[in-house]
Length: 364
Image (tube, rainbow, N blue to C red):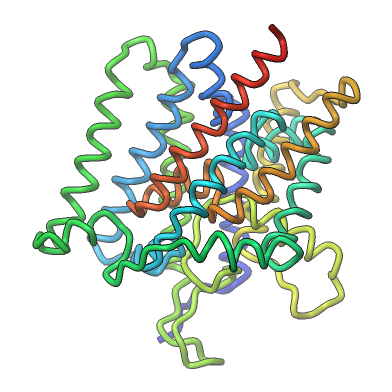
């Protein structure tokens, strides 16, 4: 049965989700790199709590959609049977280290572009190029034949409810147990501090989490085709992976560059990821202009340039290897309760922490 929702509508709605993320991110200074930096430098957990609030909202909202039959989280790229632990670790560490050098993750890079940051334009280009090289170019063989060979096969899936089910817990019970336990624990930690409960902190965390949930509903429900009339197979409208997608900002930057460079190639199409990434820039730009905070910004010196180039390369490589960034794995993947997403999240935080310590040592 085909869906009545057209590809164009899916793309425009994806653009709208990205625009909302960009505007909210700029308004609230939602920044995953900044979350780790604030803890390391001034001992403030506010932005980390904002990130954890987004995760909690995404986990609970996605579980609710799955339990009600609106979407099937098993149709995402995160709940695969192969737990590629080395890829998650190496990719996460590289991405985390890189985002500190590049002054922000993939999503923050797009937000900064919308605010007039020319450094982030360069970061986005290099990130996209290296991501392409890691998907299908010179780094692709290393990714597939070395990193992804280190894998643990879990026939039932690597998501936490499946692992709990292997212990005898009924599938219908395992999902709410995991979602409520993780989401509830995160919410308890987030709201334990009264001074966190400002309008911007709440807006940044809750809105970012809800936008990930909305992305799942858009691609996994409105864009779902039980039987594509052209292939007679299950399909998800306008997704690059052919599976259900939500917000993520590494591979889409690679696909955006490919689309712009190969525009006349009819096989290259606008996708959910590209539309949402472009939306982030547009939303950030709109807010920057409305709030009169738009400012042109360039590189400070040669060292600043080198740091951003290296950081962009590490993010492009790490984001593809780990199958996502601080948003793609840290919130979107986490919302599926995939063990790989949890490991990647921890590796990204560890990589960012190491980069910050490295920078502090250089200043000492």
